[in-house]
Length: 368
Image (cartoon, rainbow, N blue to C red; front, side, top):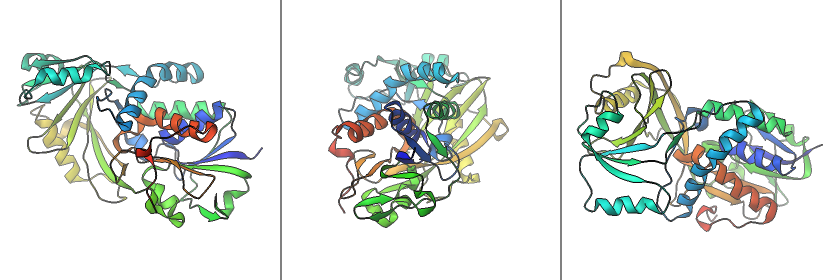
């Protein structure tokens, strides 16, 4: 049986799309240029951020994703036997001083179901072993969770395969072409597709390359490198968020089993270079020492990097049908929230494809 939908991209968004379509009885073939999760998904640190109080479509898919994993994780475990490492743990945002109206900050989280409270240094030191930072104020949130990205990818792959999804890896770059108002795969793979096959491009930072011949500017997505490190150090009790003085870069300490911390991440606009660098390591060590003084390079057990797909417009990712091409759909540009927003992105796209569901205009593809 030839595929009814071809999904291009084997990160969490592509896998969630393939799985959801297969659950609806759709025959799906997924193509991945490298190996599954070899882009941003496999390099993520797995923080499922507390659902932000922003009343926007972007905030809504973040909240939906955050809430989805509580049922998705046990569902995937029952299906596949793979523990995705889902663990609610809460978080704390460090600050040097209280905002002008601290109570308003607490109340702004309440409508999302998040319990927020301010705390002082004694509590921070209780949550973060070895804490020695200058920030003496913290905002605790009870609705943050963790997931293990490699385990999540493995569970999604197993679930997709069990539902009949054909997964083809190491295809190299796939570039679509247009003929008579339809998107076609390269000739070498076209034989697997039926005449009415729909195509979903969920290729992360590489999405513009896949649709280059069709006008890549409609999905203005650019890679942003993020480097992270694993440290041997007693982990905090929750995720710890903070910024360095005078910097807008957000860093986080992520507790891991076995006396380890994952720490990230840099934000670097360096094109498609996903290599780790001495400069990146130095930046991360400076940042982590601002909260855990004395942390030396000898504590680093691993150093890695990934390219996150940033949508170059306000409003969040691109989700929807390609204008003028009846069988082409796109889901790309989730930036630092791909794992968090993956379940909601897939739901929105699949409901639009299968039921004609509406997609918020803030996710629309750009005008040609």
